[in-house]
Image 1 (cartoon, chains in turn red, orange):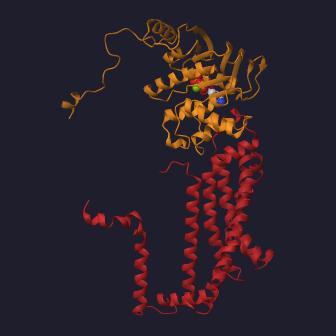
Image 2: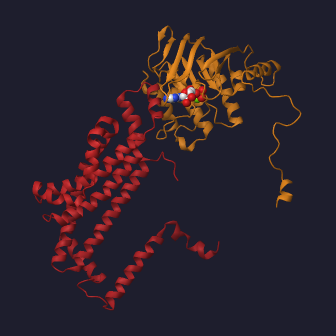
Image 3: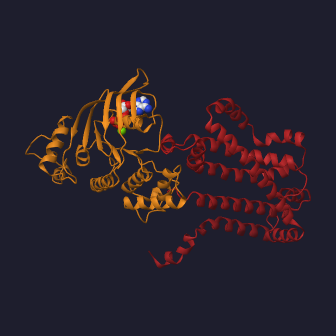
Length: 260
Length: 272
Ligand SMILES: Nc1ncnc2c1ncn2[C@@H]1O[C@H](COP(=O)(O)OP(=O)(O)O)[C@@H](O)[C@H]1O
Ligand SMILES: [Mg+2]
């Protein structure tokens, strides 16, 4: 190995190569706005986004972020818990699967955003409608993955439990749930991502109250491109952070899995 | 020493097959002495695993009866343990937790549980691996954990279903010796299913030979040799060959090696 590649190994070790593309785009953006190649109302220059961001942060933007995160997590826990319960029921009961499964699969085909008109009529434009919408986004992946995870637990494990005279509760708690946990985590992970997407969506379509999505709509209505772009960056950063948290949590909870 | 008698009386088992019902076991009679080491040999598919599943209580739909200390066996019970052919460790539990699983319903204090888990890991030579996960273990180590799990709640009867089948010869020989040592030390009644006749003769008081379709007892061979046994001993070899003759597998005396190397390097000289 040449000394050159050795010198730059730390780059690869931390895998910073993924930063090359964003850095390039940032440079391109700066060049375009510096040489005024694009309309400023369409593409605000980077420094304007930074300024806008700073002024928003001092003007209470933190509350918007908290409002968004709050409803995101509320919806995630509500939908995730409901999904876990339904997925468990479908997983342990063939009867429940026959009774509920077909309807669930049909309803699942309805695009999430198609529910918004109905939700707004039933629950208004306020917090309940938003949280229910977010909960629905979390509900489907958790239900499906919990169901499939539970169904795919090998009978061999259940036989071991029978040999050691496990009760039904012990079988559930000590065998089925841990064996299904990788797939349940996959469902929760997807739910976390979907519910953040749904949070911004809810704030777009049910415009009332505060939230990161609302600041972006305000920005658009006032032709404040800096505000829109700043909102976009924040949404992306929060989404990436939530994803990272989920990845770390999963890695810790599933240390017993063979690393590949 | 336990003094539990296991009696298998006129047992027959039929699985509902796809086209016709499949009779797997027929007219099985066995009296197993307390503390005895019994092996069951037979070609694959002749119902060995099924017989163990009946005794351990995983299959309850059969004819005849199986009695432990005069009580008819219904379902599983902590007085009967089994080591499956595949180790069946739970991948989400550490070695110690996997062994402890067998004590989940034992009436022991937490401290006593920890102590006996440690003792049994010692017994199978796995001290220091308490907190390893199954994916970090070799096949032989996993099987040792499975044996420790089978032993830890001190069953009166331990059933072993080809526990060393998938292991290399060296590991197998080591584990056979360990199993013999444990059996002698603990006095547990053991029933070992194996397709390795030498293993059966090496370990057992008696070897039951099953014949297939449906599985029936062909004969029962007493192995009246002192423990530990020598595999090269003339008496040992005689018993082994006797059992093997039941399979028509007796090695033919021959001057030729049993198999020639398929191709030697020389073959490639002109094949290039
Ligand atoms: N659950 C089952 N349903 C139907 N047939 C089975 C079942 N389990 C085993 N069998 C059949 O019973 C026969 C004996 O199986 P088994 O007891 O596993 O044999 P062995 O352990 O001696 O190899 C085989 O032909 C097998 O296909
Ligand atoms: Mg078998």
